Length: 222
Image (cartoon, rainbow, N blue to C red):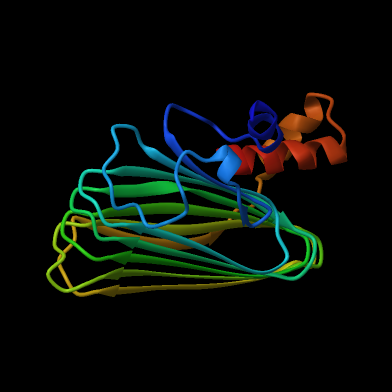
């Protein structure tokens, strides 16, 4: 298991785990099944989705219990056309789902993230980061939904992308809010390294390819 963590740079911590590799559920690496989370655990639940994908891929995250913390770690790439749909439903009062989706797109990618609040005092906080490789095409959409009578929710679905030459990207963010939240953020932006950053790395003796790799790694890892 440690090989997987090192290979995909996933930060681990004491948790119940639900692990997918290359879009396939891995029961041998998981302490829980991929069924809805309807029990409250003493530890956080860590959902890990890693590897290479192609074709249609769905990840469903359903929380129906109170006071449960869920952490999502997605780190994937695609070299062939791929669809990734992440459907998140939080119906657990005082439960929070948070995490980061890292995508390295080398081809055609359609990604949709749905964050649906179904009870009061629920949290869904998802940061989406994408690198669009040369000549790739990325379509990123996301919607945050807060139902009626679901006050005091925390909702944040953000998108940021770093794109190479001739890469195409479309953002389609949306919100549907029917109750007053504590916060409801939604963002989409393109990251571009500054001339000062590039100059600093050149002065440190890095070549063009090395600079490119350092900047991409910094973008993904903050």
